[in-house]
Length: 172
Image (cartoon, rainbow, N blue to C red; front, top):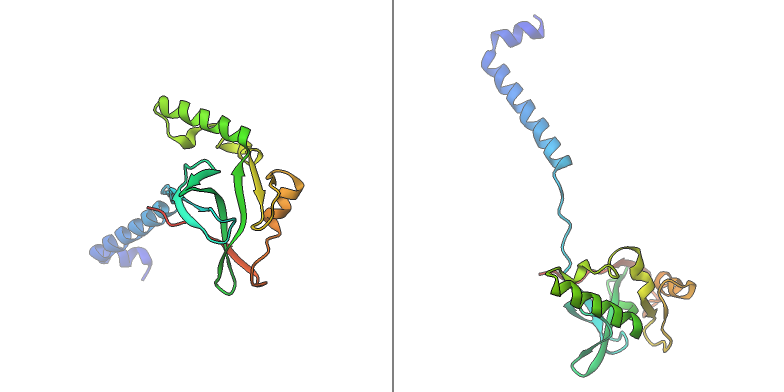
C-alpha cells in the first residue's frame, strides 16, 4: 500500500500529523526569527579604593565621581578559573572629556532623551574619551593608546591564576 492510500484511509491521523508538522515548523521559525531582547545592563561596577574592592552603582554615573567622600571610577571585574573575582583595570574620563559628556547628558535630558543617547557615549568615540590604569598604578593612560590596550588585554590576576571571564554587574 502506498503512502497516499494510507493517508486517504486514515484521514483523522493524517490531519493530526499535518497539524503537528505545521506547528513544529512554526515553532522552529518563531524560535529562529523572533527578536531576542538583550539584557539591559542598568548597573556598573565602580571602585573608590583603587580597585581593592568594588561596588555596584547606576551605569549613568560619569567617573570620576564622589562616592561617600572618595573618588569612584569604573571597575572592570573579572573571574579567575579558580573562581576569585578581581578588578582587572579601572576607567575614568579625563577632566575635559567628563565636562563634554556631562554637558551632552544635560542637553539630552533637557530634550527628554535618556543619558545613554549622548553621541559621545555611543559608538566608536567612547574608547577615545576614557583613561585606564591597573589597580595600584599611579598613571592613567588613554584607553585607545597602545599602553591602554595593553592594560585591558594583559590582565594580571592577584593570585596568578588564569582569567575565566569578565563579570557583568547584576541588573534590576
